[in-house]
Length: 251
Image (cartoon, rainbow, N blue to C red):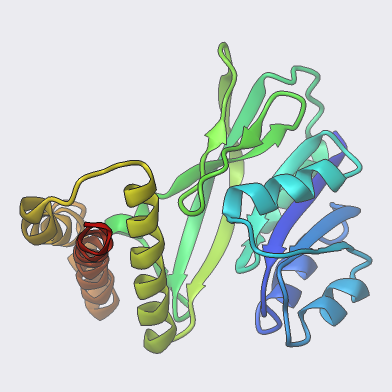
């Protein structure tokens, strides 16, 4: 199977080289959709002979679809800039020979917090559909937490191997991401006409913490597990707080 990899970027010089190196030599077609990097991101991508699309920021789903349209192959492996593939997944991809374009592939994740593999909690049981045929599948157009639009009758198969997600390098970065995602989700909710809910704002964070730290065994990841569960609770609070602020300004 001939596979193209699509990655969206902005100022990813600290991590993109690791991602691209993990694809070698299995993937020959790499498409980078960059929304205004000012660091060394594009220079690194050029070293790997990637096709580079320089564009504005129109949202995760829309920018990913720009890369899909520019790819040489119909089979698309969608990665984020801080994601790499392990050797088992690389071998699996090299051996795939699939003719059915209604099949999509679910891939397990190993998520890392400051280079520690998180085995439990919210991050420990992560898997997503990331390999699909563009003739049948595209990303939707929401600005954040985009998802794939799957056709009726789609078959979902699981691939051996993992995507390695180096999601957080330090606490400061994690806090900034949490704030940004909270604000973006509030805008998404407001655009969809979702009404603010004080009950959810104050009780959903507590439930999120208990769910991920206790019920999904996040405490077994030590201090990192506590930080992740606490930050997930904070994110849940923030998205409803910012939604309330947006709705209040519209009145």
